[in-house]
Image (cartoon, rainbow over all chains, first blue to last red):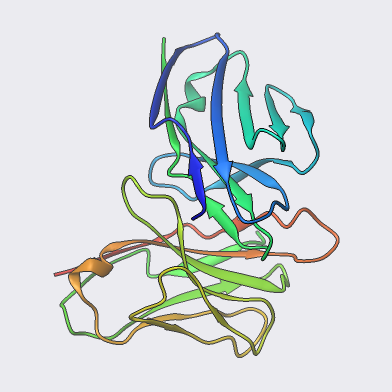
Length: 109
Length: 114
């Protein structure tokens, strides 16, 4: 079966750095996405990786290793507004998205 | 503002009733999707449409139907609602060529079936 694993919840301090991991086992691979979802709101797109390596976008970076079935989302200089759930999703060989359950990130002052 | 509009935002429904959740996009995206989101679970695909006039079944299609008469609209119908269909429903769209294909989501429809 297809599976995406990510931690259920993480806590970090304002101004610090946090890394949210995602491991996947899917039928084929056609890209990995990270989305941010604030409570009661819709998910919004953060990043996309299809090749191995690091993609940087401001305070957010996303890393992919296809051989290890592994990705992480790195958030730097954490702000209170970064408190949200972070969803990892993989596009499989049928171009369907397989979603993780999300990681709830709690930022403390 | 361009995007996806869902209606209603929230609805309480008696079991056995028929309900249609509406979804309209103005981005001219080819593909549209309906997901449900339940606590502790990832987004689960109900139905999708790769282009106007075609639809397909997702992971959890039972009890739901969709239609795609044109590019902009993709309504989701619950023929006879059951309590297990209590959930938050998200409509999404994406461009399927020349881009990463990221999804753009509507604000969600919170449905409670009693």
